[in-house]
Image (cartoon, rainbow, N blue to C red):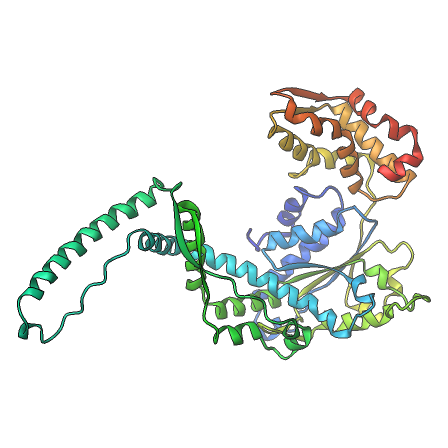
Length: 462
């Protein structure tokens, strides 16, 4: 999607998947547009403009992660979600925090490589077809012409004429074979092809973060000395064409260029989502061997502030990566974060808990609404389900009440309710031939009646 969308258009795109949370959508839309604006400025001033990182505050299941993920898709930007609580686990070492940047680079490598593969797809397809023809009908090896041929008897000339005729005849057969492969006439035929075997991973001793800090890629270093192993596979021609196409596309791509473009993409467009940041707010937990939460904050700080991280693909500057942090902040509050880290998240947005109407909208409006998902799933079995308006209202009401009475897990409650509601139907669907099922208010109450009656049971089931 075009990264030059206006903030209003970005919000409209987010509205297709996320209900409510207008303030958060506006903030991320402005942050994304500012990236475009920054690129239009003179280089000298451009380096001075740092992204305005965003801190989203709100209960679970209201759309914090989804906003960040959808924003990255709109911008076609490398994106990674990091649970910061993992850095408080036993065995943690300071440099592990930098792994988030390395993972972001790997994401960017995959994105750029995929784009390059699409660019060379047509050429790779032709090369794959040529290899298939070589496997099925190889050309005979022609004799090399001897400059002193005239000194010898004329028998060799006759042999050569026969060989030339044979060569031309096989070339014609190869041409017809290539056309038949192109038209898909031989797709189901099984042939034996020779493909490159994947090389085993390097020893674990070479794969630690310490090696990456040195900027060394042992896989590439030793890969140049070791020959590529080949193995034979029996596959259908249509599958062989895809396998060979991938191999040929790989050969046409310059991985040095891919790495350079990926690093540039990370530095200019990367988005890191720091989830559960409220769990590292404050100081020591007071029990157990847990790592200092303040210590984790101080390790994250230089990456958010802007530093250079060494990866096996090269050095990456984090100055212009957009960081989005999120947390419920039930126990702690944003002020419990160390002041330096607070200062690096100047934009704070509070996300609201979901209302009854929000639940209703979530079930109906988004492109990936749960009702649309279940309808599509059951249609594969020939079962057509329709939800009445009253049924949708009842499901929404029930989700809202259970969230109030038990743990508030936001929109995720709808997943468990819908699964419970359609459990019997999903089980029986393969045995129902082309039936239409109306999900009305009576059906909803019947399926969920036992859970409604027993509040203790609902805590476990929902």
